[in-house]
Image (cartoon, rainbow, N blue to C red; front, side):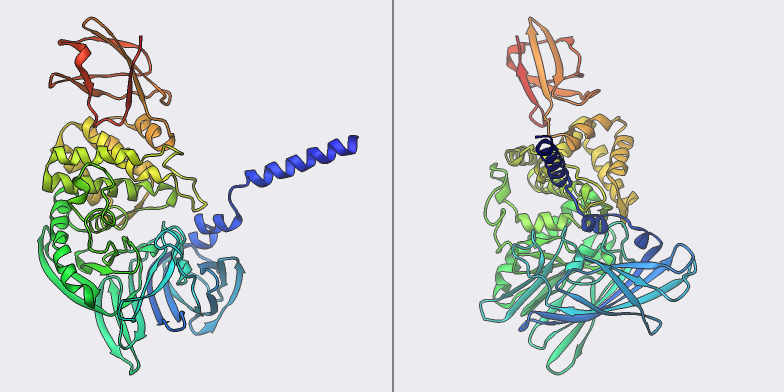
Length: 542
């Protein structure tokens, strides 16, 4: 009997530990700044890649130039996911030993690494990369064909990691300073990648397209797009001068694209007004048609919304305003400011990308259709909020938070605009943010502190509430003649937030906390309406 009880106890203990272990060593190797990453700083990549669409096969190399931050001979971590294989790694012409742990490959350097010096390793690799199942959410290579039977190929890899298709330092904290992409494709196809086209080599049966990025770029923002593309473009007179805006679309879609992409300069006009200058004038702006919905690849924004307004023709807000613009064009381009200019260091802070960029849809509507329309739009997307788990994910294990980072995050930011209560001050805050964090990787703490400082309000408990819990603040109130009694429940300790309400169109402010307070109000309190621009719930109690 005692042995049976002991067996059951041990079995329960083992099972509980198995199921409690949410993450693996691979998650840590992918999601943390390991010692084999920390000692060197990325400076330059040259990704030299040949793509064979007939065989769904790729082969090439990536030259990785880095600055040594610490002395001594070291292990250097390079990431590459199977079924792709590293064939060899060299430094100064010498082949180096590699020790692998799953997707992480540790290069044994022979050369002494001297602090302050720049060195290079060249990683040669090949194979049939993972095929995207449901791009861009489950990324990899999308191997498709257009209506004329020609190959139509593209990459996408956020979350999964750029190492699904090329070897790199696959962590967001360290962005490469500049990058050259040399992509070889069949001669009847074109490759469009990030930055500006430097030149095209005619190799006979193939062509090599050389694209150069002159700005820091995150790994998942790097892309390859291959198809029977045609090009058109325009010049935009922006805040930093003339911006080249280029469009690459399938041959048969040229006329549809010329009509739909008229929204591109409208987007640029709105976002430069609210967020500041486009962050990559040196690299131009591109929209590139792809065989999936779209993605915020830096200076090479991909588009697959079928030339419809809305999200594949649907209004995600239910307000009607969502059909006044092309969701993918506006949303993915908005990421040039929030994702590509200001970039999270850890995917746990992905809300910095998605909350602000979902809010950018609201800003676009505000600029072109007015403030009331924008309010109706952002309030409308609340119906998509699940409040299933916190928006901030778990750190150092490549784990993102709730998908509520899109609609709830946008409403959280819209709520801050109400608290600032000065639209010009709010606009300047957003513009300053893009200037002060220009081409930087950041943390949630940095953004929280910045918004608190610039707004002049301590928003620490506000962010705790909306980012780290799935609770919606509940404003409970009682009416006693002309006296309004109120307090918040369903909130974190110490939460307090002013809120606005109206009576017959006249607005008043109250300052609820977690304790009952009262205020004498002029007017008929039975006609009191809480301003819906605040993302809270309210309840009249006895």
